[in-house]
Length: 449
Image (cartoon, rainbow, N blue to C red):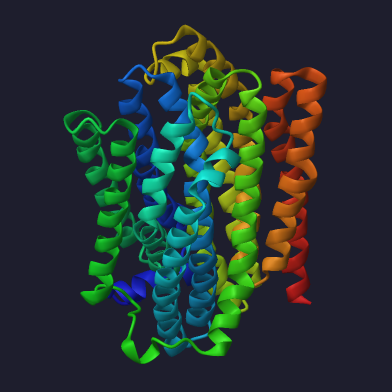
């Protein structure tokens, strides 16, 4: 192995010890994701300083719109990233470069479509999110800005995925950090200095995403990446489009199903009062710090799995999976302990309402129970995407969201009330851990025969 950055990236994918490879690619991503989650936590914090729980609730109600934008970004980012990693593993550098360019072009086209359609249907969208009299206008203001800035949100997310697919994890994290710093700096200026309140929080979020996207572009256009977009590849081939969408469309449907489940959850929560929605929103955003641990490890393993699948090194894939699950679950148990002990103090950072703190603490101490299990589910799903087998990844999400989580939400809510509703997700993730790991192991072993 030489000392070049290209060789170091390929060495990690191909030869590094499994646990070290997972940590080397996962930890920088987790650090970046911890910083990125501040997008929502900072908005929640500064809006909370206004002591208006309805605006807090509105941010939570509007969140599925951001999730849907990310879902569409995920279609291109996941599909292109899977193809890039497999192409590099097979030694086809030209196809990898062509795929990067296709990712850029498709991101711009999709962002324009989302902005135009979303803004033309703004009223029905806000109603569908579950906004009511006290939260409707606040939700509308937030959603309007998020939709208008779709290019920056989707570009920031997709370009970061493309960087990670070639092993350029630090470069992708740099974009996350830059975007978050800009968001933190602009939130108080727009919310309080300019008196824009919740609209100001949305504007700061979009400008933060714009900054992150520009940093990723700077790496690409400055020749600091392994792969580079090129004008000669600006028109994607039918083969590349087919492969991107074959993996990407199921990935998008997965995120859309998650968003739909989130909306069902919010609409059920509204039945217990709009302050309950605010409490659940705070708890879920705090939990997202733990979520980003498993997402970071899963995203870190994705290029390793894709590269070695392209190289037909199936033994290494199984070793990486085992190491990833152990590292991820152990880390999540530590985070779970912190949440359990300090739940009221963590919720109290964002509100001084005794009702919101009490409800939020109860929610956090329940939904944190997903953490030891959900990492294995996420790694299995991303591994299938990396292998170019999205049908299995989508099957996991279909069973998880449509056949388990949503029915459990409705049944447990009806039988046990609010307490039953918030236990639906932990029960779902426990079942899905066993299902997804068993399926992935059998598929990989089947490749060896």
